[in-house]
Image (cartoon, rainbow, N blue to C red; front, top):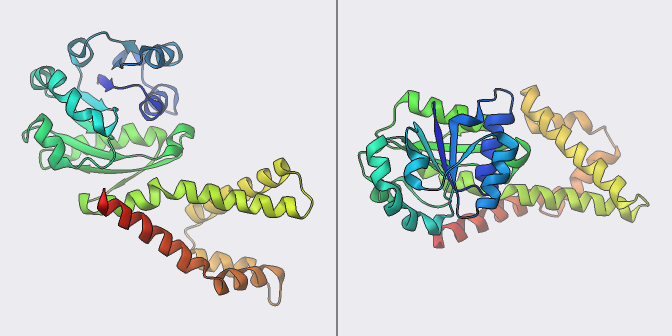
Length: 266
């Protein structure tokens, strides 16, 4: 299978590295890329052995999968430049452009094309993204499996209906920033009580990482795990009580509400 990436920015680069340097690497010679910033594409070529092309026609020629890794506002500019090649090769089209729905993508490339919308997150850079995927009516199970294989190289994949993409984005797309804030707040509390910032950040980071792994791998509800940590009349239950009394749960939900409200206005 041959792949073409239009764009070689951070996210496209993370996907290419996942495909060529991950657990089940493919030969970089099977990946073409073209980018306005040739420096980023050439750097990826040095690291991953991919082909850097000078024209869209060369990049798309012979490809089975076309990954659109350009910014959302650039899609409408790129589409007319690649449509002849897309019509000729008829690849499976994957878009990672935030906020661009399948209907919009079909208006650019044709309602007869196989198109999959994907939303990875920033943690793709370390191979720990969770990516939401949704295909249009023309895609088959085999097409979706191809997309899953690509994005499982940078983390986990969840198949969704398109109407769930907004809430998926609010949680998977925005919450890494909220998690960073929580970890930093824990670290600052550690500094308050005498740890160096590096010590505190290491402790907080690995504790949160381990806690997430515990939920993911133990198949145990978070509240049950909370109960395991909280001893009667102990220090942890005191901290939990303080969080609940000060509106921690409702603040988190309100935070997601704010993201969803903003998303509806964009």
